[in-house]
Length: 218
Ligand code: G3P
Image (cartoon, rainbow, N blue to C red; front, top):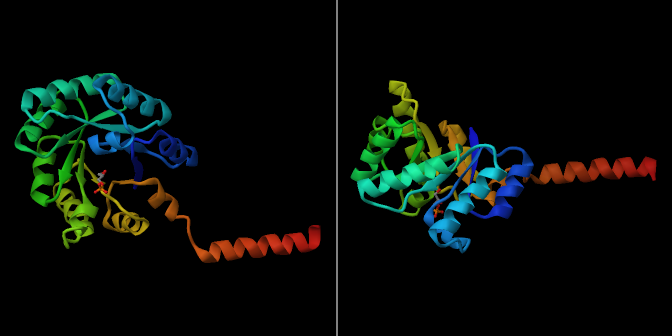
């Protein structure tokens, strides 16, 4: 499973990149706003900066909701850097835009996926990734991870190459559950990734190793 970080925060992106396990970055307008990035030029420059920090795919979301606006923005974003993947919401215009962009060999990430039907349409249109939002489904008393299992199975049934990118991951256990479900990618907050390291027996074992070493060597 590939690990993406779900943030526009440069310090967190650098920290994940320094760990050596980062495969890419996803952003969205809310995450950009959280970092105070405003104005088209600043937003585009921020994407370019992220591309310099990481080696992998960087999802950049279109703001337009009409078809012409989506493809215009999508082409502009894709021209920014070869690592950019154009993120498009799963609306009627979004599906048409994904079809157009994929026909131009522009990679896309279809976002705001909450059902198998949406994922299937996005894949048919040629999306590189589909992004089911598991945390937001959990928020509505619906099992988000179950949707990952179902989409992975459905894509496997037909040999569909669109990658399942589990998004809206809120905690470490979501990452493990997505790996069990066969997600191709999990895009995670940094603290959820770092949480994978935690185990009290590791801390206790290391403490013991150090104590035993120090007994003989100090
Ligand atoms: O990857 C999508 C993500 O940014 C949304 O997460 O926690 O706002 O549902 P959340």
